[in-house]
Length: 129
Length: 311
Image (tube, rainbow over the protein chains, first blue to last red):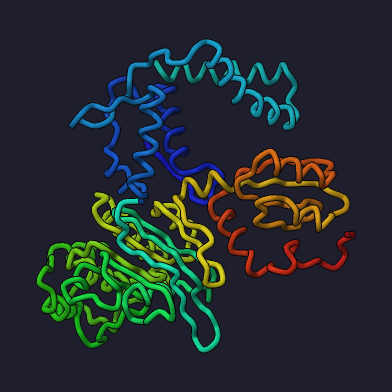
């Protein structure tokens, strides 16, 4: 998995790292138990302040995406249900609203949007296996 | 904060009758990278020179390592690496000779470190300094400054005029230097994208004063943007928005940059009677730009009107 960050973005760098890592885990590019580069190694590779990388990793540990093993580093955690059903719904709605707004603005209708979602989901599920 | 490495108290410096630095209370914490930002003439270089003991304050005080900066001993000075643009190098010396020449003056000198940094900038040590590119000369300066393993690194606009490859090599070296959190970096820079990569904290100087002094994350969190569509701009009402940093006309919309936006901010924006208000997430560089524009736009915060604008 190769992380690429952009400066001058409206998204802070630590969030870019966290989101790309989340995506890699969600799509199976990173499997449970896979090690992640150390904070310093990733910071050196991306030419970033090590604290920024540490912040991204902390957020991922807090969200249960990664776990930190004393003396050994960071690994992809087994996915646990850490949110209540209600919280998960809330979070889903939060990402769905802008996505739907954008899709509709682009001129797609409800059927087309649903078809595209099905298609992409299918691909993700297949590549994760 | 833990004992700051650098601390100024009401630091003021006049040149003739012009106050270039005014009432500066500045603290640089240990173990972090602090970026000092500001327009040319904002007082950054003067502040840095006072910190380094090269210039005396007119009023107020400045301390490094808990001592007055004009009273540093040679041993104290060895703990500080200072790099200015155009760090003087003898052009007829080879890189290797520079190292030997400089290294002779230090009790602590790491040859391996010097070699590594110089190699990182793609420099062959037998080359004469006069034949190096600007970026490579910066690399030699940096290597000379870091070889004594200083605790504190002070850089004044180190990337000025550097080609992109040398700039990246500079950033890589700084990131590595600061990575263990045991060393402190203070750097003044105009390159906001580089600052976004490597800094922990930002300090903004405007017209000789410190206007912002906080962590990068806190700075980003506290600055918000709004794109407002109004037919008629009421300057007084815009000026009354609490925490307004900048108001800029861009086509049909007014772009507002606000610090610490809250309900009062929203209420004040509502009073503009806009047809649309859209929050914008700002890149770090835009937030800084908004702040730095303040001194330029002191009297007309809406900026210049262009011919043909209806308002």
